[in-house]
Image (cartoon, rainbow, N blue to C red; front, side, top):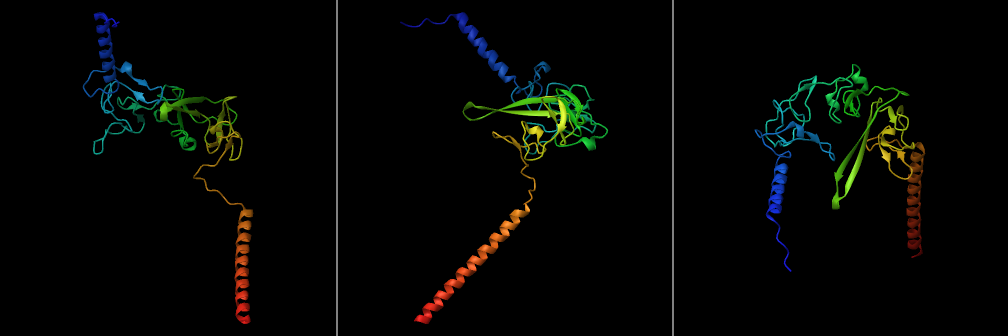
Length: 267
């Protein structure tokens, strides 16, 4: 028995849905310069935490020229826009330079460079912040909390696609304790001293090297670039082994030489 044909209303609805889907796809971060756009579509991708708007990588939906520090979409030989002057920053949407943000004011996710540095930034600056400034929970702060004081934790999950449709989740935890000397204990939200290599740990941030050996017994390890000293007893063992090998080799050669002389003498 033949299947009934869809009604004209159904066909019109399906066609309209497909057209709207294609139009929405075309407007998702692909519109060139001069095309209409809406800043209400500016958003952060939930998986990669990258800024997304209606425009392509060379344009933005707003006012003057683009001044992003690492602009996407430019080929070799293209003229890059100028960078922002000291004391200002370029937002994710590239809508012109803005003055640095004070402590407590809103900032874009993980954009430490948008926050104004503290007066003692040279003392607070480390690989875990930008000139002593941090953007935690989308608000500017300084990495100046000392031992035993309350601290703020900010965790972000980054999802990366893998083979066969698998997804890998990486959790980045940041805090406003002085680094690398201190870390923020998630159980008490208090700054504590980081642990040296060989110490037991539950999170990477607890380790002085921010490296953790992920096994049943979680242990802080040295970073790959760290120079590792050789204990004195290892030097002694190596020297003794070298002398034993030399003496054994010499004794073997003497024994072989005596056997050869004895055979020649007997002949």
